[in-house]
Amino acid sequence: MSRAIQIRVSESVVRTVHVEDGVQAPLEMLPLLGAERMGELLAKELEDLGFVRDGNTAKRTDPDGIEITVDLRAATVHVKLGADADLAESVELETRTAEERGAHAHRELRDDAIGILDKRLTERTEALRREVTSRLERKLGDLKTELDGAIGRATVGALTERAGQLGRIEEVISDNAGNVTIRVKL
Image (cartoon, rainbow, N blue to C red):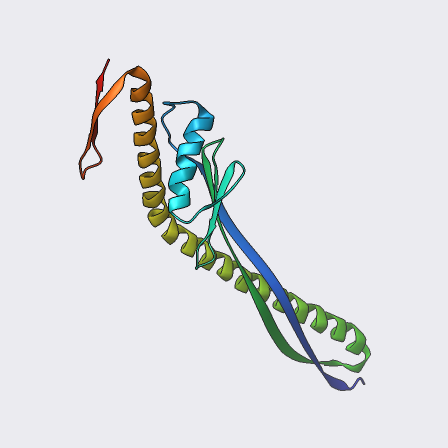
């Protein structure tokens, strides 16, 4: 007759995880001047918004950790956000089994504990990823408005420059709605 034994397994894990989400999108700029000149005009507008120019890119990191990179030559914007977290989980399992199955039951219990920990860490990592994505989505609306304004001002600069190539600019009138009238004497 076999004796019943109780087996208890305790496992814990600590992991540092990094999650990141980002989006890349084209900037809709009219090709009024050459791509390089349009990039220069946009760079000037972005610098006024706190971007730092580095060659053909303009970059800014906002206080909330969102990194914005504008490729001036390709007319694209890349926005990304990352987050780090130290995740700690522990689990304690126990079972009763026959003494002769003790070693086998102990391995099974340990494997179950590791599986439970992995599942919990995966769920917490996914929750962090969803949080990062949500923060990024909230920021994109404000950023779109800000970049559209910079592109609009760069476009007005390009139109004015182009008009100057056609003749002598007599008058530039702009209204609050963003409409611009440029009077040129040919």
